[in-house]
Length: 98
Image (cartoon, rainbow, N blue to C red; front, side, top):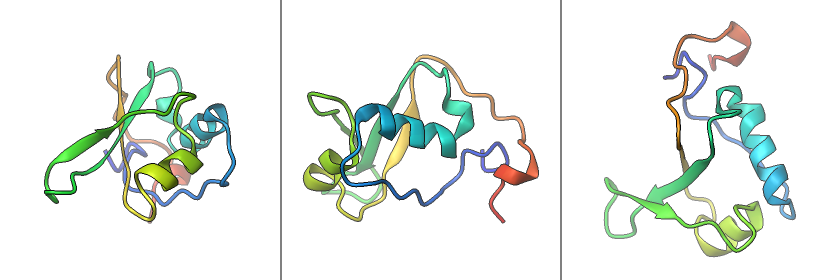
């Protein structure tokens, strides 16, 4: 998955973004997410470092402010695409972290 450009990345968001801005930023960092049909965000469960729990979107969707105030702070967030499988073929060198 890493060679497909779907590996771990550090993404910095502006505090007051819209759900559309949030999704656009994710798609800029993970181009294969475009047209995947949507996504869910997850974090490690508070009672376990192994299990992941779903972060339900706010009334307006996911925003960096909603996530930092309600769920994540500085924690790691995991992205799960929904509706279709993503292409995991290797991407060009510009998308592969060294």
